[in-house]
Amino acid sequence: MSSTIQGAKQTGANSGIDFSMAARPCFWLFGDSITQYCSKLEYTGWGLLLVDAYTSEYRCADIVNRGLSGYNSRWGLMVLPKLLRQHAGEPPALVTIFFGANDCVIPEARQHVPLPEYKKNLQAMATVIRDAWPDAVVVFITPPPVDVDKWDQAKGHLTKGQRSLENAGAYAEATVEAAAAAGGASLDLFS
Image 1 (cartoon, rainbow, N blue to C red):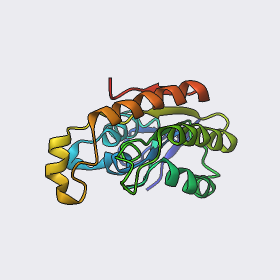
Image 2 (image 1 turned 180 degrees about the vertical axis):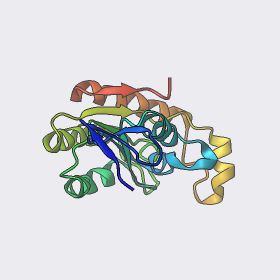
Image 3 (image 1 turned 45 degrees about the vertical axis):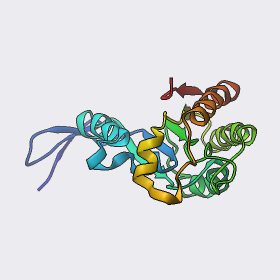
């Protein structure tokens, strides 16, 4: 079973289909559980849609999911340098930063991060990423709106009353501001 090499492309001996042997750019997804679970089939998550479009359909990029369920921006910033070291030889073309859904819980909740610190954490993440991967495009994604009644019903008594649409909106606005201050792009899922 051999393949014939034709420049940068190869033709599969069995399939006869051309494919490229060139390295593909990588998209690196970094965030909380919304990122971690973005590749789950039952949700038809946004990460799965990226994989389908960029990996399956066009074979032009690889998607790396580094979502951390339960994390806020403070904890994400703490582990980011280690994650970057693990991927040092594979600089991505694009990095998403998608935190805020946990940060914006009520101040009494363990995951809460005050709004000013949240903005600073996002900007610091962009700096750390750009120091490691200067050519990477950084895209900040805002926390989405939350349906408080559905959230409380799904999560039960442990987190009841910890989330609000108003807080999510304030953190979404802060995400857009942090992106602008850091020279990154933003994707506003809230508005």
